[in-house]
Length: 140
Image (cartoon, rainbow, N blue to C red; front, top):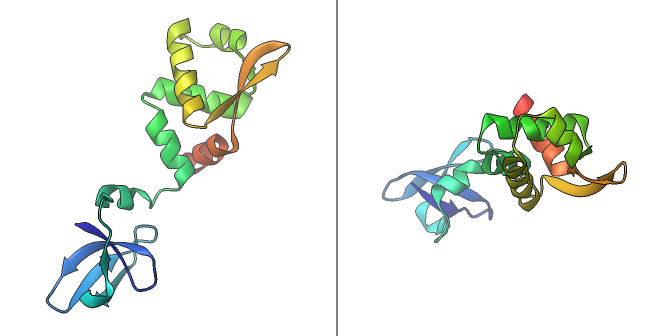
């Protein structure tokens, strides 16, 4: 499978190629179409698996990539539901050692899923709009 660009400028996954035409699939909709081979351009350097992943909204992909365990997912869901929360609240409420908590929070922050904030004068974190959207999509 390869990633190709159609005559309409959209990116597709090449499903099957014959001598004159190719069947392609839109990664976002799953719809398949046929185009003449001459109208398709190979998109070099783009993995077809990454192209296929675009069927999932970017916010949900970001959550999936940044969350390594169910416990981590639970932490993010709690920040979406209850946040913003101070670091002290997070330490008291959840069964995570300080280094594990800070490791997860760092990963979430790098992924753009949380932002640092002040809660009752203490350092804390709140979920970003991307986290809210991604968790909402995953809950469907």
